[in-house]
Length: 192
Image 1 (cartoon, rainbow, N blue to C red):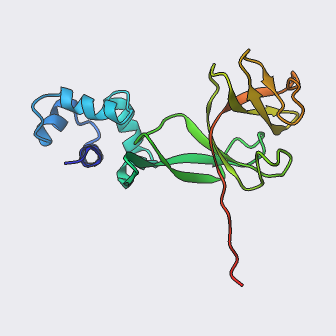
Image 2: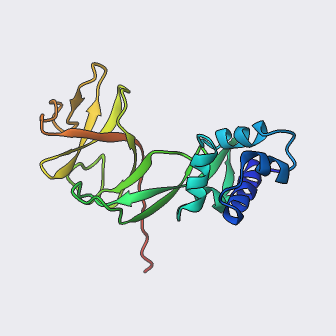
């Protein structure tokens, strides 16, 4: 049985009985002991049974989709992230972005859809950026917010962030929102 199957079975048990214990889950799945339940949860980036239960009982349950594909020799998984507009003042997502990821349940990611050409050629209108909260990494692309709009920055080896268009440090009123993990560009084709 594949790991997604175990996770889906655990999710079904929790939906039927939200107060089910780890011991009961292990017994239902015929595991030798409770550690197997924790093993599968940890393998899918869940921090214990309560974290998993919260995800299962919420409206968002990405692991139940069960989509996993082989890309070369790597296993890739369907991931979902809340999608935000190109306006940092908007606090509510405008939708959801689905993509393939190396991890079956990536945490702390969100997507932002670029709304203008101000950072061309790096970012084009319609591009989707997958963002993770700020980190201390050097030499990475960073999404910034300041003066009511988003900005693009490049964190260099000394930890400072520069504007890629000018090579100058970003203004002090710009605050790092997160590290850009990846950029997805959709090319549309209109039939003639």
